[in-house]
Structure formats: C-alpha cells, structure tokens
Image (cartoon, rainbow, N blue to C red):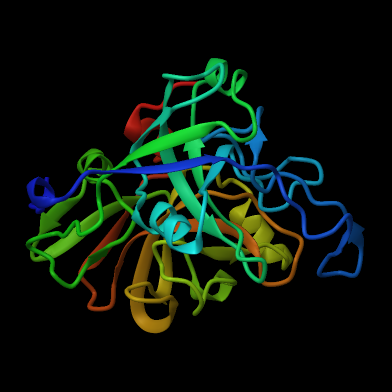
Length: 291
C-alpha cells in the first residue's frame, strides 16, 4: 500500500453516449501495400472483452473491447469527458433497455487526424446485449489530481484510486515497485509522441515488424505494460531512462507506426519505478470484472 491524497479528490459526473463504430474509409492501405477493411474501432463490440487476446480477430484494426463512448455537445464538454475520466471509474447507463446498469472504465484512446477519442467501458454481457448506439452513460469520475505522496516524481495519469489500491504497488528502499505483465523496449513504441494531453490519448506498440509481432502475440486486452524510455507527464515523447506504465486497450494494427494501444497510468523520469513482472497480471483480475 502506498500513501495518496485520495481523500482530497473531487468526484464528478461526466455524461456521454455510446458511439458508432467508425472507419477512415471503406478500405485503407496497410504498411505492406495491401487494401484492408478495418473493423473494431469504437461502437459496441459484443464478443471481445478485457482479458481476451489482442490477436486473432479477422479484419481487426485497433479493436476496442466492449463499449466505446464519447462526450457530446461542444469540444469543451467532450474534453471534460475524455480528460477527466479514469481507468477503474464506475459508469451508469442512463437510457435505453440497459438503463440503471453499471460498468467500469477500462481505458481511453485518441486518434488523429480525425480527432476521434473514446472512453472504453466494460459491461457484463447481458448489459452489452441490451445497449444501443446513442445510449447515455454517466461516469462517476474520480482520479484527476491523484498523487503518490511519497513519490512526487511519479505522475499518476487517468488512474482511479480504486485501481491504484488494487494494483499491489509497493515501496522498497525508496523505489516504487510496480507489477506489470510485460516490459516493452522503446524500439517497439510507435504512434503517440506529441499531440493530445496524456489523459485523452494513448501510446501504440508497433505491430508490423515480425519480431514486434512475436513479442506482442500473447498480449491481452487489460494487460499492464511498461514502456521504456517514454515520458508522459504533460505530453508524450522519448526520454532516455524514463518509463510509462499503462493498460492495453486496443488490438494490433496493420498501419505503419500504429499497433496495440496503451492507456497511460503512471510515468516518471527519475528511476523511481521498478517493474515487477507477472505474466498473469490483467485489469480483469485487478478490478474483479465479470463477464
């Protein structure tokens, strides 16, 4: 257990709606000059959930597991929904046949150039079956401003207090020991540098080179990964010796520089974070999420 300021955080309501799946065009060109129709970005994906393999889905490209939502109205309102929601926050359905049901935020993604952003939510299968595009959802958002009191150099990004407590973080000899599923070399880190604030977007682990594919083939949605030599404080970029820890939230991509999406949870540049590798670690187990 680590010391935090969770008692001083505001808990606020963020309202959005279930999005429709979107594709950039009917066919896109892959990194090796093939035409491909891409499925799985946004909307409702009935048969892929947190804990499932990232690979193995036909025509899947940046597949988002479960249900994707976004804010409505103007860009400022959308920005609030995207930036202030946190992994582990509870989500209530406000309309439709699933009204009154609850789910959990499991990640966030942001894409350029169309500025499409999604908050990805896990619901039980019986709830997903009743959801429709456009259903209203409300997040009980708590986590913005969360700090590790004994580690001021570690940034906490889009992480709820509940997830932090379930994670099993440990302080030893002045270092923060963080359980992770896998450590990812900087060589494999792709899309994500610059652009949006770290709270509203994501890093990608590139999935084009055969060695990268081999490295990533056992990853699951909800796995916790550490990205080496990446800094995600007030933006995202390369920084030697820094680390970013996040949760896998999209599947692989056949577009150059893109791949398995990672929602940022922690980052530091001073060597405070020490990874503790546990290949079985997954958000599904950490938060007790049910199918």
